[in-house]
Image (cartoon, rainbow, N blue to C red):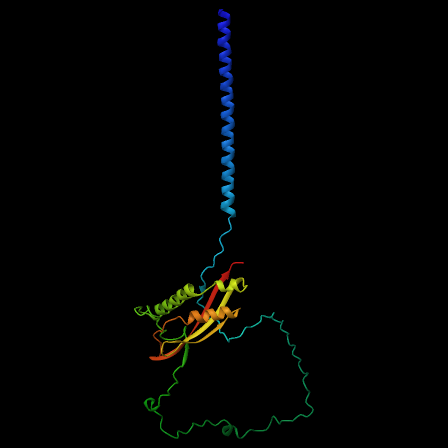
Length: 261
């Protein structure tokens, strides 16, 4: 009877030990699966972070401040410069004289004083005093470039600035903000354009402060039409001045934006 009890206790202990080992193995397997899933999720997250394609959105156009180019209103097709041909100068051989004039070295020159006589110029009238010279009136300029005018046109909102340089910078910033807000960059994609688009514009601020004589050059007529529409939104300004007189001021405005392909 005692032996049977010991056997039963031993059997129970074996069963509990087997359950414990099974639980340990099961717990290890679950931990392994959880770690594997976490690693896969981390790898997927990292791939998403570094391979996500940015959303295709149109950025506002950029206004460049560039007065270095002079636009004649027409496109110029670029051509490779041709190598310059070096011209070879051909020298003519010296011509030997056929006739010689014999000069007598022993002859006496009698007219030396007459040949080298120092004669002072004769004053025909009294010198003119500086105050008696009439000033020559120079013609007033009609059109002046924005970069060379003495006083640039004043854009509304820039009146309180003290120097001409500050007013010129304010003018360019105000113009750039209007272009960035009002120019429809979606037109390029609508008409099948792609890549970098550069629109050359030029307009005058006349003697009354009005924007006139708008000239535009672009790769597509719709872009030219849009540029004219935006420039016509500019308000009336205080006209520029040269020599204390109102003058027409020419302003060049390149507009640049990129169409995502």
